[in-house]
Amino acid sequence: MKLELILILLLLGIVYQGIGQEDIRPVEIVLSNGTIRTGEISNDKWQAHNKQFIFRPEEDKSPIFIGVDSIVEMTIGEEPEMERYFGYKGPVIQFSDKIDLLPEGEEVTYKEDTILLKALVLGTANLYSYISLEGTEHFFVSREGTELTELITFRYRLSETDRRIRHHDHFITQLQELLPDCGWIKDWIEDIEVEESELKDLFIEYNSCDEQKSLVYVNALLKRKLSAAIALGGAFTRVSRKEDQIINIGTGQLTPRLGLSAKLTSKYNPDIQAFLLEVLYSPFSTYDEAGEIDVQSTYLQTNILYQSSWQSAKNWPYFLAGLTYNARLSTKKQNGLPAQVLVDHMPGLLVGFGVQSGRFRMGLRYEVNNLGLLFPQSPSYYANTLSLMAAYTVLK
Image (cartoon, rainbow, N blue to C red):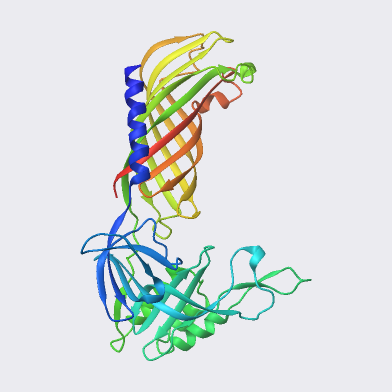
């Protein structure tokens, strides 16, 4: 009981720390009046599509609002993980990748806007991106001595009666006109997908293709990132006969879980795709009066999981699924069960969902503890766990 109380208090501490934690990064801002200001911003709360954001000046750290309409250039972070943004006032194509907001016909609709463009590649030819509030990605290009222009890449419906979807491919002509003097790149342009990774590779290669061209800047070279977190939560486990699954469904016992989690993000979509490796100390306790089952065991659980996320406001909801492996450490009691139900080594399945904000994430999970019980020749029993887990990233 003392151990459970300590772990619950630790869980509350992690939640408190996670809610208040911010990812602070240094920033340098060049304003339209020529003033250069240095300070800090919260990398979790700042978004390029916002019209203003909170800035903490280096002098006194008192937070103030900075409007994007006053920014000429902004640099976030330091080498080698540095991001550069440039203020842009001009036409932006109005479209959305959401199927119910697609434009009809091939007409390009523009709207004058003031936004911050993220520099992806700078040099003889420049590539920028902008992600709108609804998550639609826009790409802008320019060359020395030419105006900044947006690539025309949107999807559209043919008409009200013809609901088929088409992709506007005028961007191919735009890229061919912008990058004309590097012969073999023309074939690449004809087959290119309008994605950040492919466009970045194209512009990097073009800016490096001969001595007449220069490559000045590439936004944060793509790489996988590994982070480590402390994981803590509670698990409700039930072991019962199959015929008793819907009888006294609340029978079982709540136990704590504690361990470490390593997260490896995707190279091309670090905010969206990731793999998790978890090692958890997992007391396993259940009581089923109907089946006269009483179990108290301790397992070391290893989870290999895939996590898929998406952005919602300032948070990142996620779904995860994967495999688990439970190795028994000790057994205090195991009454009322055939020997094959809970064994020393158990493979299992796990699915779950949750939300992440900054360094903190929390989610609800469902586990099939012993995958072997799903086979027809196995004893007629189930072992499943419902758990609530929180994790706080300590190294990233």
